[in-house]
Image 1 (cartoon, rainbow, N blue to C red):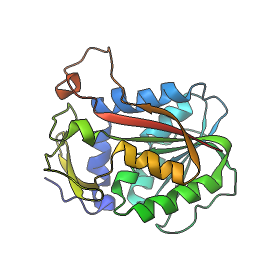
Image 2 (cartoon, one colour):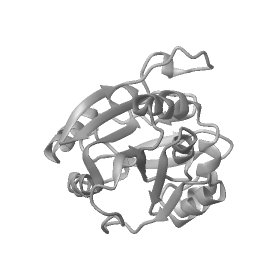
Image 3 (cartoon, helix red, strand yellow):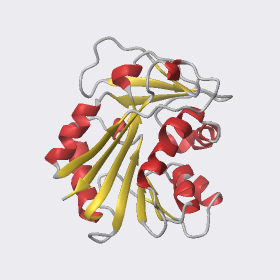
Amino acid sequence: MINPTDYNRLAKDYRLHRSAADTELVFGYQSEIDLLEPLSGKHILDFGCGEGKFCRMLSAKGAHATGIDSSEAMIQHARAQDRIGITYICTKEDQPLPFLKNSFDVVCLNFVLCTFLTKEKIQETLQEISRVLKNGGSLILLTSNWEEGNGKDFISFRLVPIQNPQPGDKVYIILKGDHPILLVNFFWTAPMYIKMFEEAGFVITKNLKPTTNQRGPWLDELIAPPMVLIQARKK
């Protein structure tokens, strides 16, 4: 089992996991794409893009995709698989985003805010995202459904059981595969995210827990939605 603390060192194995991530793809990324359609011509920021899988999905649908991440190794992997028209930028944590005001139609946060330890860090990030998002633009959050998935075993990951988690508590996710990865996240529920979005001036437009009719070798996906998908609009 690989240590969870260094995303630069995890980058190669993380990319290999993502390439076969059935649960994330079917219940998460594809549901997010469906929610955002039509995508052609939209300027979309993937905040915390990792190795760029979701950016490539956006680009294939005709969007102008920009991916940012604080891990140089992740950005290098993304650029190595680049599609024409995708921009990847390595950013430093706790610094302003390198974009002008009102630059994007959509900002996507896929499995990102769950890596933030404090509510204050999340609120600071949301304010900076609001700055670069156009008025009326969409903010999308995709994250694990800890409220119903605590201790559940899904095809591509397992949420390690935790008793009575409190806001900001450490929680652990095992990404399955030939190179299993243990990730440390922090416990935030959908209602907590929604409250923080509203405090940052966003209006919630969708709060979903995607399911699927697609046949597959599902495990606990059959009894608990593995993901939460929240869409909010900038006033």
